[in-house]
Amino acid sequence: MTAPHRIGKHTLVWLDGDGRWARGTSAVVHDGDEGLLVNARRDRPHTEQLLEAARAALPDVHIGHLVVTDAATHRHGGHAALAGAEVHVSTRVAAEIAAGPGPVTAEPNSLLDTYLRRALAGFEPPAPVFAPGTTFDGCTTVKLGTVPVELIDLGPAQSSADTAVWLPDDETLITGDLLSPGTHPAQWSGSTERWHAVCADLASMRPANVVPGRGPLTGVAGILEFRNYLEHLLVETRRRFDRGMPIEETAVDLPLRHWADWGCRENLAITVAHLYHEFGGDPTPPAAALTLAAEIAGGLRRPPRVRPYAPVDRDPVTDERLALTEGASAIWDEHRAQTPNILLALVRHPHLYEQTVPIARGVVTGVLPARDREIVILRGAWNCTAPYQWNHHLPIAASAGLSAAEIDALSHPVGAGTWSPREQVLITALDELHEWSTVTDETWRALAAHYSPVELIELVTLCGEYRKISFQVNAWRMPLEPWAGPYRLPSGWPGDRPGRSG
Image (cartoon, one colour):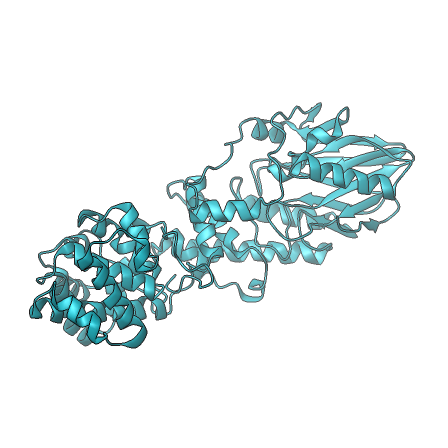
């Protein structure tokens, strides 16, 4: 528990400790022997720890009131630790808590599962029942001795219902998640434009002290700077929405200027998804938005260095070149249905594109069995840490007869899988090519016992072609398309190496 900050005569503040979105700032307002807690912690143990720290700092004060500023679980999940306290929430906050969507579930060992477990490490499930004792509309005042605590219902802004707490005696404004200087906010609901306007209203109160939902204490200048940040998000996100840029790309493409060093950049996935819905796009399911956040946090999503052609930028000549992808194979059937970003980037170099596509088509429509071909491609994607390539070939490998267990085994040493003798030597050869750029005599003799000379020519060429593609998608930071996502990585994916292509 961090040490409290004293603000004026009547307010102690415990700031957000480690910047995780599962945490938040809490404050105790007191006068005489009466105390009021603004926002509990996410679970009962952490709230009890906070109350112990409050008792140590204010041994003669009894905290008999709890104010909850919004419906986020980290604001009220530990409310059960304040048994008997009067709970004050706006009618709208109470309704949003009651109608909460519930916890997001994730497939075990998925990127989302890992992300959530890391974010929620050390927390217990929140108390299941939240029962507000006193609800209000508009504004209300709670009296602690002679000290007024004004609760201001601001309506939809950062969320569907937001409350600010004004302490006139200390000239202090407690904002909850309306402000988070130093941390990119995650907006799930509410109105971003109104949030922007509310910031101006808060600044007009001229508080001497501002306690944000997370981040450092600030003042009027901090409110206005946060308002500038929101205006920047609105303008830049709208620009990309109008160009047809996918949420997945916009979330990492926004120019963050002097806000680039703010924490929790992955929260932009959630805020951008909400803004797209506000602009008229389809809603993004919470699990999908959180999965994108997990991909950004894991380094799988970054701004592309070579940007694929957007639909609005393509002309008839470009579309004619892209028609070169027509060919007879499952891979090229997929490319015709949805043009992958790698081709939309490569076509920026028309001559190279026109020379490259026939070679790529040739190595996937040759004499090697489809199953062997996909073993070559997936093993190469794993060896090169190329998640874009890996994800694109998961459905193709499955259609070629590789089981889910076999696909996962391609992320482990060859001895970990139940491979046939032919497949064992194939995977061994692929590993040798990756490590030494050649194949040992012993392995070559074993290969020749299973493959014809023509197949051996194609095998090495296929391996080299997809190694080149791995170089391209990794160096260009090729974004995975929405129709190909989310990222699905095998159990043996190297955790110490970030995704290089995202």
